[in-house]
Length: 389
Image (cartoon, rainbow, N blue to C red):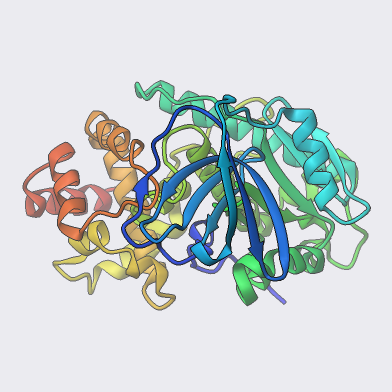
């Protein structure tokens, strides 16, 4: 069965209902401790409460990087102290994650990641090298544009399952049956990147054994038919970087066109370069072709609806065109309005979790930083994309 990346907003899966009247939680820089009763299990969570709802629900950042959205009926006990918040270090994090995984998993360290895997060590090393190259390319890209990103608070976690079956078993709780149709995703809740060993997929293996050596892995994943699979992994890993560098905030009101457009902008693979990432910002011809087809019947309100309403990207019928337009808009802004776009991103990066703008507020923020006359801007946008080759 052919595996492809379906157009769902997998990286933006939010596993809870929005809190009513959610407000940022303000207190001294100490630790919070909550006891949560959920699904017949009691959990003791340490970290910091980020948001508190009027009904008593809380959004909490745990010391392992997981976000806990706790409804009031689940909250058994809550205390705090003045001990400064300290996230788990690499050793503690590795021990904690391994303890939560089935037997057979191991950990592989890179400079900025811990790769947890139950496939070959060679494939884990290949993933680690890919992520590190993307990391360098991502930070260098924004640095050259004057964006001051922060370092992640803790090592970034990537999970690599030995096959699709293991991956689906793990991912089904967050993605449901959609987990069978995508090869990887970034979880906003756990802050972890999930995928499986692509060299074992029927699409790439041609009936042969799974590749385990670095040379064979590179040969398999350099195939033209592997490009879209690798691009999906890069796409989701870009989401992880965006949410751990200060570019975006988890569970904040990040316009979906922006999140997805930026991830598509970075997803063009550069597997031939072992040290850098030369293809960041390369024309994504699949998205360009899709946008060209959409343009024939593109309504006048298309840009405004993309900026103000996430539904076009969440609806499977309209998502392909919306993803294409999101990529095209980010590509245009980064090429023609880099300073204005950086200022726009800087403001959005300061947004608090669970505080949502109205469509009018979203549009006003865009106009304040980019351009006031949306009609003239849209015409310029279409002319520019029409000339991309």
